Image (cartoon, rainbow, N blue to C red; front, side, top):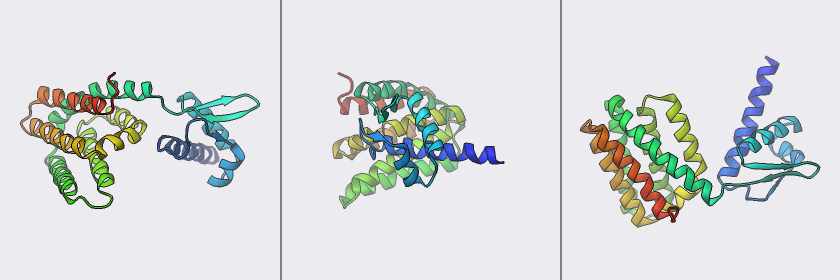
Length: 217
């Protein structure tokens, strides 16, 4: 039981630090001090040290002997690579979703699109955040509809890695309008049970985001 609790604690510390790095709480080259992090998280140095080692394996942290741990961050090339891989996986996801999606999930996707269009017209404070959140929800439902735990896990992970860049893209009104329209086209293809078209549209959707972020140069 104690060993399980230790693993659980290490996992929670790792997830918290990982989220903070990916969301920009910690910037590139920031030093991550074990003592400070332990005090902030209310844990000893051991789970923090182990979490930092795990983050180093993911390439998010660099540990320099006798100096400390520093945030490596995600480079522009990393983001471009993730989008290229994600474009292919999103296409696969849309094709599989065509085969397995439920009526309830179709209704949920329709509701997300309606809310997205509403908030885009509303032009209120926090509009960009709401549209971005709904954009992520649309993809999350599609991941679940693919009926593949592995694909859902990989794509959800990629989503976290590029969430800042994605927020910048979706937050731009012109891109937001196009993104919602692209989502609508993907959903219509799925409803018609045209897996090949859904795959093509989903693939193109992610590549369009890349172009908007100038990651294709």
